[in-house]
Structures are given as structure tokens and as C-alpha cells.
Length: 92
Image (cartoon, rainbow, N blue to C red):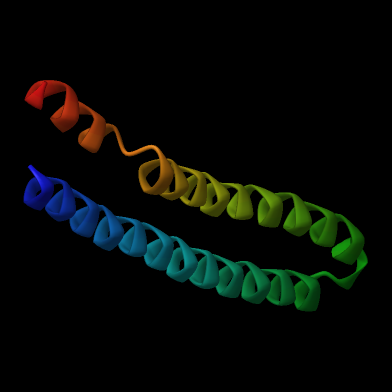
């Protein structure tokens, strides 16, 4: 029983690490593309710099929200692991 719980916790730690890593990588790539497209758009039409910057910050907030959702899911599995609870209830 203790070995099964430790296996579940070990795999959970690996999964949470992957969730956070891929969230960080995805956000970094997204911000890089977003900033590049903003500079490209402002270079083409400088008079729209204010509008484009406002929209960029809106998209940046949504992009960060995806990462925070991943962090929330990771923290849920870290602190309230449903797999351990299911194993404990099945064992009696």
C-alpha cells in the first residue's frame, strides 16, 4: 500500500513538472511570436501603434491565463491528489 502511494506521488510529481515546463515553454514561444508580430505591424503602419499595443496586452493576458490554469491544475494534483484518495478508499 505504501509503495503504491509513493509510486502515485512520484508519477504525479513528474506530471506536474511536465505541465509547468510545457506551460512555460508555450508561454515563452507565444510571447515571442506576439512581440514579433507587434513590431512587424507597427513598422508597417505606425499610426496604429496604440491600437495594436492595446490588443497585444489583451492577448498577453489571455496567454498568461492559460499558464495559470496549468499551474492551478498542477497544484490540485500536488496537494489534493485524487488518485491517492481513490487508492486509500479501495484499500479500505
